[in-house]
Image (cartoon, rainbow, N blue to C red; front, side):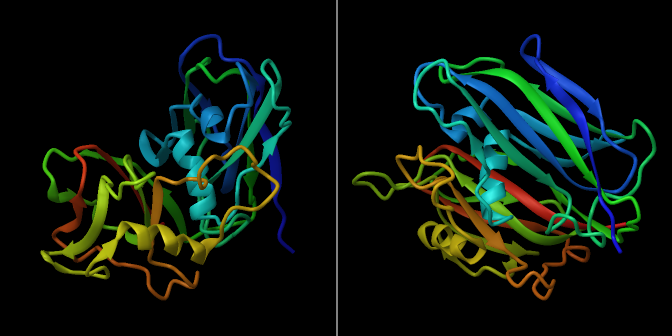
Length: 299
């Protein structure tokens, strides 16, 4: 019978000032972390994105090497698009000076509580998390932070999931190439288009994409932004009743390339033998593009 161990890492800690705070993580194999932002509305009810904006960077490192890194607002979208679940928002009184909290999962496997895919055992002080905080914005202010871990003490995982962030600023319209990391297998890649179709215009930073390996088509010959966005349905959608504060669809700027649509590894994309892997974006706006490679690392 499997057993998990849940423990508190950050217990109601109030950051004293803006900056980056570092915490040691457990030595046991780790399935995932739960980051909870406890905040106060400044004027009216803060949306989940506005609460997440209080944490501009979440980074997990092993001996200085990044294992997981993105902004908390990107993590909010990642929880929905990749895990297929809408993060939980608590205490939703619609008024200023009211408390509100948001919990986000930081996973190290495709599924939580998966002994065969989690971050492996480490030594004390080797595995750390760094949280960059902005203690107050126009929408909310941090009251305190919580961080808890789910450990799998008996696990000996042969692999874990790594997620990183690539930022590219398109400086020319049309074809815009972004080089991707090589070596590991790809489970997927989340995309963020800073500009998206709104009101009466179809303009988007990412209008279409192609994937090239060694300058040849690889997995994606061509795909349009709107269809990539619509394909999110394969992994789940907004769960009614949890987050009522949206004036537009949740995570509207995000789409997902899924190389593991069945969850059984049948379509995982190898890169070990490649000399180049390129995402060719058709840029419709000179704007920021964010990519989040989701890699499977063999131990």
